[in-house]
Length: 328
Image: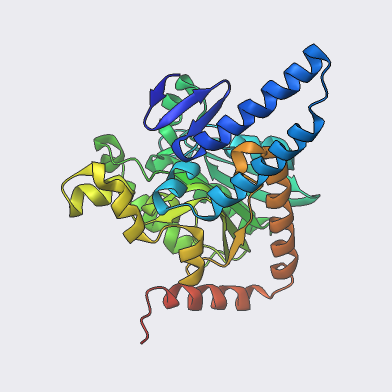
């Protein structure tokens, strides 16, 4: 089996280091099922016991994930991305392109759609799945035109009184020369400024990685949610390790210090809700994960759509001012 960056290819599913005992047990179950079918021998009791052990092992493994293992799950190659959720839970999606200033950025998708029958604007990051898609989407690292496109569509949401749902999945904003020349920092700052007073409800969900200003640029909201094994941080563990320890290989140590898991962020009141993931993570059951996400979005929309917009913006401001507030 080929190994790359602590990952082992296993058919169409990629297996993380800590998942290898789970993979081994799955192979044993599959082998017994195959033998039972081929030889006609009854292994039902053994298979039943192995399946019970399999579920128990998954629960045990995922209940004690380290911060670095959570980072690996959040970046899992088979983890559903924005386009998967658009297909699974959004009806009549109509994508809009371009920022009306420079061009289009495929790292950001924005448009109109229906979630559980309710019209809304959906904005999110695209990482891409194949090599060609990843290059076209810049691995989910948006340029300023991507953030300006997102803001253009969010302004339309305000105009037509539609809620905004943003799905965050990015390592961070693109730091290249061209992006800086076209005003990357200004574009992110402009989005933060405009979203803070946008007169429509905003719900944001971190579905994978939530990296720094690249995440914040579409993540300033009334309700912030995260999938259980997603991450949200001011910097990547590798970037943090390079600065603090002058050694990117110490990313696992940095990950612990960053407190980037949903558990830590909920405890520190930086997010509002944690969306549970299917047993063994989203990558094992995307359909069920999309149902969890749809249910969470629908529930939050119902609770905030009736709130007067003046109160919503006031609460949004108070929430923002509370970040970083220290108390003994």
